[in-house]
Image (tube, rainbow, N blue to C red):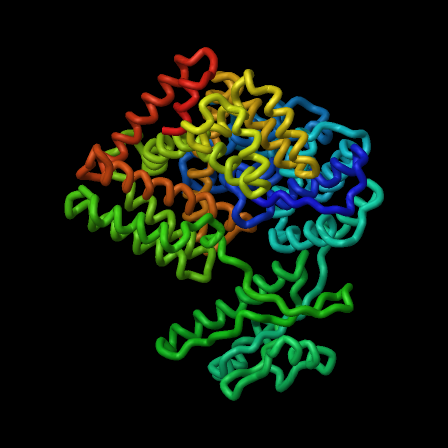
Length: 583
């Protein structure tokens, strides 16, 4: 997570809220933000569309109707918690969610079709921006601004605008040297990320093998050109894009979409199809192209060179090499798994590597899902495949959830100022005998340190989002009931998301289709797999010395049951029982 500040902001309340909004958007679209603070995969409009697509599958008898109940459950929750939807819908939510046992599928489909029309993305975008503007202009609630920013982010991704584009627009508007003098300046920002299509032309340097299929590529709107247009030659020279003897310039036009990065991905998909078709007949020779591409946009005079976007598989926090090697050595020296379990675990590692090496998001998701399926023992209780996977993953993901939020907050506070943080923490009882994470946890959580928290809030100055995150964590941790409520909600979201990942995997395999939000699903599934792999290491290398994967997941289940039982026993957090989140 990045918490950015700048010196050009006036210290008026509404302009500080503009900065808070900018910091929240920065967090939403930063590659390494914790998944809890990233945009959800779908907003209500697109969950509604997902439900309609699922109904079609039920009608075609390709999927059981019971699968629909999970999507409808998520849709109902999303509608009830969406501030924009509440402005759009005049009727009660029950009017649209017909989920009774006697409900005809045709009736449900018709109501959802009407709902989908009402939740038009352009109307949703305009209302959401208007609500954000109103909240900021009237010194409104940071909580509402944060929620609205999240809803806006989810919508933009769902319609097909690239995260990189919004991130760049956010940095340019909120964190450049240009001074923002009025809340009205936000109108310019909203226009820069609006749901407006543009026309693009894209130029790649491609290997000569493409000349062998020069006639066939025309159906993909790809053409081979002898040289770049005169207006682009200077840019190519500046960027050192010089054609070699083994390359040709390729032009892809007729691309109409929201932004340059989405256009580049669309163009590259065309090249991928040509390359894959070519490889059917020529297994050794491959059509390749450089990562840099020149892009022109219809309404801009400035032409640009952009590279391939970062793979969603790489949007996770990695250990530094020396720490990674230590962890690997520990695993190899202490692993207690039997040979058959090690073979299976190695297969999971291979699939994880295959996902990392693949350039295609669809292949990444399929490999990660197969890795999860391979790791989860078939003997897990639960019935169907997806339910077994949910039952196996949830204890690991839920027990780690609050701890991950705390550790993430500690890291952000250290990035902000280790010195200032340390000076505040020195006033905590028995300061020298406690680790940093416990000290921050006590500072944020315990009522006795209310004055210290206020001091921290003052010290944070223009880091409005970090102050808000500290307060949000205080609200979660001030009583056990709030923690339990948060974990229970996370459990639902994990269950919904695992099923969505599985449905998307099936969509790719059976129909070849993909979805705009596939990157989010890859990031989530990768995170789920990494946490499961870490659990295997923890339970097979520690004192418990699990011999099988079945034992690993059973230990994780019992561990979580004990954790949740102990959490329910706590009436009020204190210095002693709060360590439950650190074990």
